[in-house]
Structure formats: structure tokens, C-alpha cells
Image (cartoon, rainbow over all chains, first blue to last red; front, side, top):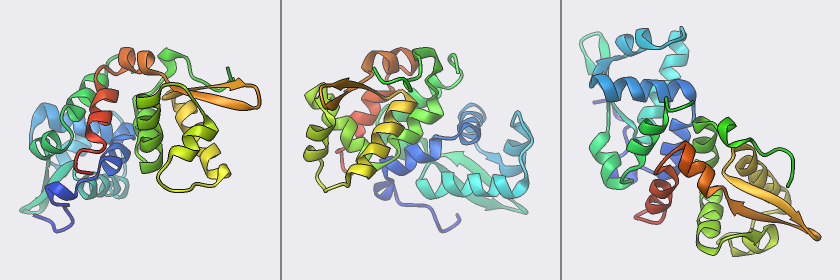
Length: 106
Length: 106
């Protein structure tokens, strides 16, 4: 596991909301919600618009450092997954509310 | 009512999340949730830390432009209130999840 992940109790509401307050990152979270753990490359290829690798790297970092996703090395790639349980314990109902809202009349 | 408020259907999830992704603005939202419509001055005075008027003006604008609060003139002041119904229709459960999370182990 890469080192910059906050512990569950270090995850801050403001940071999670800021991380989710971006349409690309919302789309990434929705993909991970629907598909489970996926490689960076797979998620990047699933996005509706083409995003440069450096921009994607930035988005992974914001999501990881805020505590929204796990990012772990696997071979030559990193695998991404939602920190669903940690978020559910820290902020009950928040992720569900965001995922339910995304796509509903956006 | 000041003019920059988005219509209900114009409120965007990303903008709401970004607006809420700040500890001062979260505190403002919590105050308005607990106390109902209040003047800018009253809300400013209720904050735990002293914030300059220009910084507060910035926070009102972010909250208003994103669709989180109404801001309406009343005499020499503006009154602030949560757009609770609009947010509930657009993003069911989101505001409740944020308010429930804020203060719980933050």
C-alpha cells in the first residue's frame, strides 16, 4: 500500500468533500463503486473524456490523500478501490448520498 | 433576493461538495441548520474563530453561488438561510449526512 493514506480516524470531512467536489473525481468514484477494485489504467480508460496521465495522477492523489480511495501497487500498475467501510464509519450515509445524487439529473 | 442564486435545477453536486469542503463553511452551515435564518453579522459572530469581513463575504458568495444558502437583503444586513428543500430534492440525504458527520469525531 502506498504510504500517504490517512488512517481511518485521520480522514477529515472537509477533505473528503473537497475531493468529491470535482466532476472527474466523482466519475472515478462512481466507476469504483460499480466495478470494485480496478487498475488506474482501467479506470482512466472508462472515463467519458480523455484525461492526461499527469492529470489522472493528480486525481488519484487527491482521492487517496483525502481518504476516499485505497491505491496499492500491483505489478506495474496501481489498483484503486473505494474506502467504503472507513467512509461509512466516519461519515455515515455520505458516500451513498453522493453516489445516489450523481447521475440523477446532473 | 440577491441575483446570483442558481435555480434549483441548476444546482450542481460538485459545486455543493466544493462549497461544503471547508471547515468555516461547514460551521456556517451547521449554525444555519441549528438556528434557522440569521443575519450575516450574527452568523459571523457565532463562529469559533474570528474571520475578517472580506473573508466572510467570500464564504457567503461560495455558499450562495453553489446553491447551499439563500442570501436576501433585510435593512442594512443580509439574511442567510439554508436551501434545505432544494438540496433535499436535488441530492436526497446529502445535507443530513454532512451535518451528521460534522462534529462526530472531527
